[in-house]
Length: 381
Image 1 (cartoon, rainbow, N blue to C red):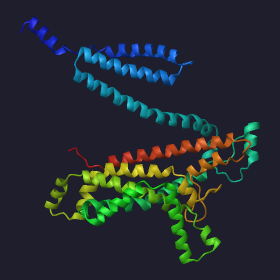
Image 2: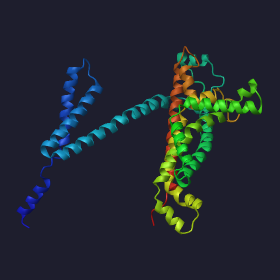
Image 3: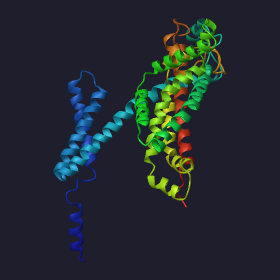
Image 4: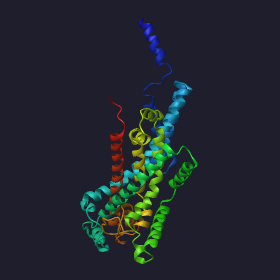
C-alpha cells in the first residue's frame, strides 16, 4: 500500500469528526458569555445564575458544533448525553450541600468535645448552656442516650422486619403462583409502602395499649409502660417490612429459572434450592434492599417520639421505660433548647448528633457492601 493510500484512508476515518479540543473552546466561550449576561441581567453577580446560563450555553454550543461539523445523529446523541450529565450534577448538588453542612457544623463540635459520645443529658440545665455561650465554659451533656437508643431500636426493628419480609417475598415468588392471596399481599404491601410514618407510630402505640389493656387492665401505670424502645421498633417495622418485601421480591424474580430447574433436575428439594441457589444468587440485591429499609427508618422521628418518648438519660433496656433516639434528640435540641436564651450549645449538639447519624447510615451501607460481596455466588474457577 502506498503512503498516498494510507493518507486517504486516515482522512476517511477522521472525516466528519470535530477536533478533540472543541469542548474546551465551547466551555471557555460559554463562561465568558455567561459572565457578561449575568452582569447585565443582575444587579449583583449571581453564582447560581452564572452557572445556569453557562451550562445552557455550553450544551447549545456543543450541539450546534456537532451538527455543523458532524451530523444530526451525533449531535442529538451528544445533546442528550450532556443533559444526562447535567441532571446527574444537579442531583449531586443537594447531597453534597447536606453533607458539607453537617460535616462543617458537626465535626468541629465533636473534635472540641469528644465527651459528647460518652455522656448523656442527665443533670444538664439551662445555666450550663448559658455559661457555655457567654463565658466559654465547656459544652455539657452529650448524645450517648440517643446513640444507644438508635442502635437498640434499629436492631430490634431489623430483627422483626427482615425475617418477615424475607419469608413473605419467598412465598410470593416461589410458592404463590400469582393467586388471589398473593395479589392481595402485594396490594397491601404497596399501600404500606406509602404510609405516613406518624401513622405507623400511632398504630404501634394503639396496638400495644389495647394488648396491655386486655392483659393487665386499664391503669395509668400500665398505659405509661407502652412507651418503650420495643414499641418504637414495632412502629419502625411497619415501615421496614414493605420495603424489604418489595426489594427482595424483585431480586428473587431476577434469578434465572434455569438455575432452579438445574437444581431440581439433580433431585434437590425446593426448600434447599431456595436456600442454596436462589438466595445466594440474589443476596447482593437483597442486602442492598435491606440496607435501604434500615436507612429509611434510622432517621425517623415522629413514630419514635410517639412510641418511645424522650428521656435525658441513657436507657439500655428497650423493653422498659422511655428511650431516646438520635432523630428525636436532634429534634428536641432544635425546638426545645436546654436554655432558650442561649440556643447555640443546643444547636451544636444537634449538628453533632446529625453527623453521627449520617455516619451510622454510611456504616450500614458499607456493611451491606461487605455482606453482598461475601455472600454473592463465586464466579471464578
